[in-house]
Image (cartoon, protein in one colour):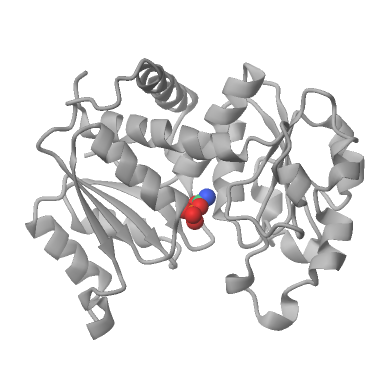
Length: 303
Ligand code: CP
């Protein structure tokens, strides 16, 4: 059984196959073919131990558009409150015949452990500060659809890289697909060991902006920091926030991305988030097509 645990699981051919399949599925949807019979009789379980709006809803929409049966498991209201372990929860899902389990968990590595305990495909929907591979795929899809290519693009990923699974998965996938990535942020929010990532780094956002095709702001993740380390919104915005003045430093064609949820007024100003250069809402829409492609390819459905 195939899994999608890390962006590093995908070589360039496999990643391009996901993006091309997503584009075909999006074209069907544009032609009002909203529902395909592809995964009829298959069961997809959404197992979310951490909060989510976009990822959970788009996996549910994706599975339903492929006619799969969807079980949404949320920890609140489950026997996890009685101390049930991830392993016992996994064995329960296994007994119910899950063909795919989409998991989000606060512990880095939880999807890898789950993959040892269930027979179905496991999809990592975000594990701790580690990875979020379907976010990287939908981001790559959005860049390719807006800018026409990925190879040779220059992408700046800005802000709280330290706590960001989105940054790590994007760095890995974009490198595989031939883009150049620069991580930009204060020294305290760049991870130790970033030297081993396939990226450049910079502390100076204003110097980087004129050189990029894409600038991606990351959410400052208050829930993963001690309160005393959480920067003031005003101070952070002054150094690393995307505001109207910084937007003017970008090349004419460059786009502005954010995975959501946003701290408006901190890493991104409201007028930038809502500007025509912003792809934030498009990223969410593309997430459904990309997740349809992932489920379709993993579960081997036939169109
Ligand atoms: N981008 C993202 O993963 O958003 P959610 O946390 O709302 O799923």
